[in-house]
Image 1 (spheres, one colour):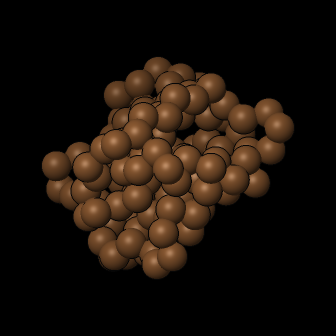
Image 2 (cartoon, helix red, strand yellow; image 1 turned 90 degrees about the horizontal axis):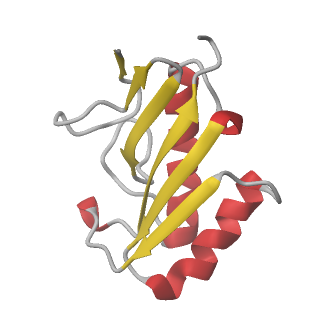
Length: 126
C-alpha cells in the first residue's frame, strides 16, 4: 500500500489525496479548490465540478494513472436542483463513455462546496 499526496494541491491533514493498494487507486473526496489553497473556485457548481475533476486528474497523475483509468466515481452535490449543471461539465470531460457513477444529493459538504467527488481508478503500472 502507498499513500499519495500531491504537491501544490491543498488537503486536510486527516487524509491523503489517494492510496494505491495493488492495482487500484482510491482517490479521497476532492473539492473544486484552487491550487495550493483551500479556497473554492467562484461561479458555483459548474466551475467547481471542472476544478474538482482537474484536481482529481492531478492526483491520478501523481499516482501514475489518469482520468481514462477511472472505474467508478461518487459525486456528492449539495443541491440536486444543480444536478444538470454539474452533469453538463462532467459530460464535457468524460464524453459519451464515462465511468460508472453514483450521484448523491442534499449533502452538507466541507468548505460549503457545491460538489465533492471521489473515485476508484486502475493503476496500470502494476
